[in-house]
Length: 236
Length: 350
Image 1 (tube, chains in turn yellow, orange):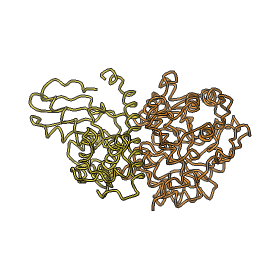
Image 2 (cartoon, chains in turn red, cyan; image 1 turned 45 degrees about the vertical axis):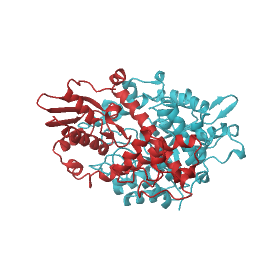
Image 3 (cartoon, each protein chain N blue to C red; image 1 turned 90 degrees about the horizontal axis):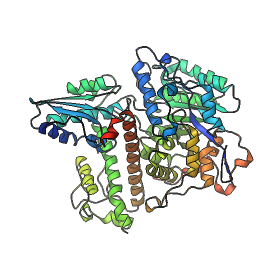
Image 4 (cartoon, one colour; image 1 turned 135 degrees about the vertical axis):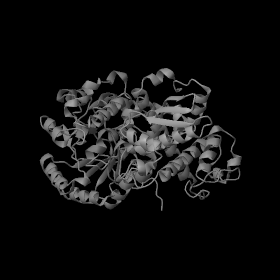
């Protein structure tokens, strides 16, 4: 799916910036998920983006993160002077749009309903992404005959390069977890410690169920988005 | 009753509704939420087979005859368990109340089980209502929707002190089964509303109650699985898992089922159609035919057989709700005890 109404190099740059914004639950860019309904930049550098989500009741905290991240990505794009991000067709859209425009933060946008910003929520889902990414990286190794306990001895540098490995390294780095060549492949996503001897089978099981959860959610979300906005399928 | 290849399946649908979401039931000033809710449900229906899709008008308000035909006549269901969802902030008479369900069900003795609900934010008035409902409708279960909006609040956790008070009262009234459905909002909004760790706490503190996590904890299957494997009294409600994935995304459905079979176990998984979101007919037929794929990716998940499916489609729920099952539907003793709590003890962690 490509966003509509991309008509200038500046809009292309803005869309590229939006590709750095991920749905924290699905760990996928909002651009490939089809959440960007339109993206335009005027000649004088005003970016206008419309976002849409799979349901009217998608969780407001994750929706806020995507709108706020989109705003930050746009205003950090060279040539963009100011940005307006509008979340459409959502029960909390008004509060989110106004809050992000005013840079009020989550607590300021939902007065009396929230007690903290969303950093901990974001970190919790990054840790899930690390676990899920561990499954994606380890599965081919296991299929090639590597024993589970051998994985525990391996470092990231021992793993053949792949898109999945690059992504795992980035997610670990975002959390401040070891991500270099000499870092253990299997780590606790909270402490960063190497997984203990004997704990590998359970760790891999948790990694797999986490990846399964993300896959199931992504398939339901994309199915719902396609029901809600049938034109998306035609653009695919 | 469903019969295939000489095998007879007793079907208990643990999750269905008889709602009125038509505009005549929308609360003035709240129309956008009432409309948004039912449109969201209607989009879910789109994940099922095309020939089972309804128009939005039919979906908003279907008749008693529609339900009886879709669920019992065509849908093979023997006993159906109503899971009420009130949403009175948006729907004048409620979306799907205990009363509405029972008024309909009373005309069809033996077909329905009437679960009721409570909302811990309703104080003493809610306690009295719970008592009346249990007495009047013989409820053995409650459905809790933690994301319900209530007088300015956008939801609650089961660990809230008021929820404990309600749980104690419910248990003293004879309630056995607590169905938990998480939604997108909670207080405070910065927390993950779908988090199931509160179920973990109450399951430990109320060991005599059964906690059925609806929609297998979606969208937090991983949290649910890891919690359920450690709590003998936590069960999986399969509504949405079958309806939303089996047809639309068979490969992911197989993975989700494989995970549930591993972490939760076939004695603790229960079919629910989530009617009227999805009709039970295609779900029952498809599930009886379904098998885990024989490829490497699925090789270390537990396998399912006819007895497993008989349990998940009805026998497990029958055990939890003391529903009498005729002998022709029972499974041999070596196939395990339906609804058995011990099936969960796969993983222990200090």
